[in-house]
Image (cartoon, rainbow over all chains, first blue to last red; front, top):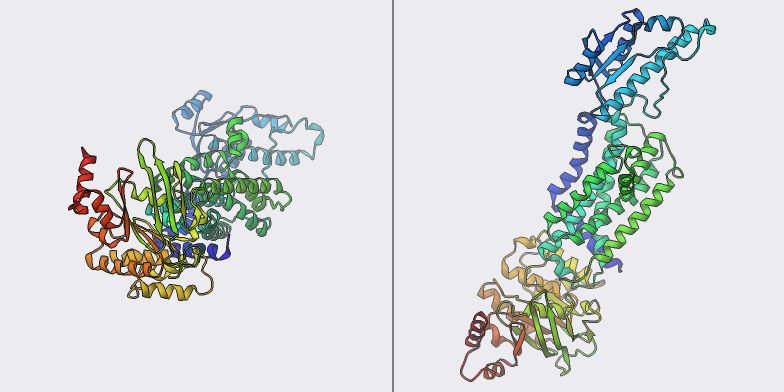
Amino acid sequence: MTRHRLRSMIWKEFIQMRRDRATVALMLGIPIIQLLAFGFAIRLDVRHLPMAVYDESRTQESRDLIQKLEATGNFDVTRHVGSYEEANRLIDRGAVRAAIVIPEDYARRIKRGRSTAPQLLVDASDPNTSQNAIAAAQLVGQRKNIEILSSLSRAPSRVETPPVDIRVRPLYNPALKSSIFIVPGIIGMILSITMVIITSMSVVRERESGTLEQLIVTPITRGEIMIGKIAPYVLVGYVQLTAVLTLGHFIFNVPIRGSLLVIYVVTFLFITANLGLGLFISTLAKTQAQAMQGSYFFFLPNVLLSGFMFPREGMPVLAREVGLLFPLTYYLQILRGVILKGENFLDVLPQTGMLLLLALLFFGFSVQRFQKRLG
Amino acid sequence: MPGSFPGTEPGGTDPVVEVHSIVRRFAKITAVDDVSFEIRSGEIFGILGPNGSGKTTTVRILCGLLQPTSGTARVAGIDVVRDPDAVKSRIGYMSQSFGLYRDLTVEENLRFYAGVYDLERGWRERVDWAIQAMHISAAPRQLAGTLSGGIKQRLALACALLHSPPVVFLDEPTAGVDPAARRLFWKIIRGLADGGTTVIVTTHYMDEAEKFDRLAFLSRGKLKAVGTPGEVKSSFGVGRSLEDIFVTLQEGEGA
């Protein structure tokens, strides 16, 4: 490997990138559009779920509970019903997504310091929606507990158990706002997609247009071609990271609790791993169309199994294990840890080690597979 | 273009290319079938034959781009079968289709290849020489993709010559180039050979046969004749032009 050859290769790639204005615009525009789309439109948290009310208690206390649920912004009371069956039917028909059933003795039991169990029915056909609705309702219950307990503390002898039986306390993201959760995910997703697609396409383009044939009859080595091809995209990756972090911070108020330095250092490994994957796809694909298909083949499991949208804890064992092969899985854990929880480098060391391993593996394997030969 | 490698002195009689019983099979067809020949230093050597006769495959084997199924080949003192990477700094190659970057300018392409061929000091002089010698000074800042066929071809040749290789392979260089540009091209080639560079050219234009010092005639992967244009002609019988021989061979294949 000579510095001269490598430098020429990088220089050439930069010129080509600069002349391909449309691709540059896409690489910089996509992260911003995606961030806004995910941040504003595709919200995992549920706002204003239509809710039916079956209030058997009809007291000051029960009305207070309903009003507190509505005040979370997660529920809108749209119907009042006269029976449990009717509430169920409305959920069945999809007329409402949730129903609150308050028992007849609700107020009486609270006043006597006995526990009571109002029931919240939630349409859980979309688990994300229901999870968030349930979490919000539990929060209301918990706040109510504290309120009741403190009002009863003047007469502590009458308390047997907490009046409402819920113990959930959301940490790091107390408002359960999904934008805070989704922004680190978008960074990982965008980097992963652009790196894989752009590199696989760029190598295959050289093969399709015949320039690779001319290039491999020169003394340039496989490693020089590959490193030279990906170097400019490392820079692109950092621009994307910075753009999404900045917008996420100022538009969606995503806190950056940990060290930016750790994020930027670890990102290098993540980018390299994905570039390696892109190069690997390019060694399999003969045409740019195939490279595109190959990238998408990788794209879907990346979204589904990495923990970008669905929690990995809830996955079947096989899916969870397959997810361990994706750099994104580790990168998301690192990003969320550092950005949201303020974890330091030592906290994310295991994931960083895995990223390093995958980067070496993917990159080494692609260079190995890339032949300076035809046919 | 003095040859700077030992054993490749201009005008020497040592063969600079030795091909011995080369065979290359792809799935079902045998593209090159037991071909042997030698090329002497400073020669303009033609590899002639109709489409599909194995010209390009032969050249690709000699450049280390393809591994032969069997046989041996030495180019500029390197065994290209055993050590295909080592030969690459000693040869220039111009592929059949335009292999330079269309989105780079003439100068940028030259500068890139100067870098890739490891020219450090003096690369600027070498690029200037190439622009002059190849008659491409008209458009140094034009994108290569927008050049005319003749200039494209000479630019590709310029890139292949930047590192002063003793041997140059040109695969169908004159296909799709107008007559004036073709004439200029042959003038440049002759100049190179006079300077001691060995030039190997494939073509299916039989009217170009007279330009070669020696030539090999391929048909369906087999070597039909090798020698000076006169020798090749007489080996097919007196009084026939190469064009006649070519057509006869092609018809024989089609039957």
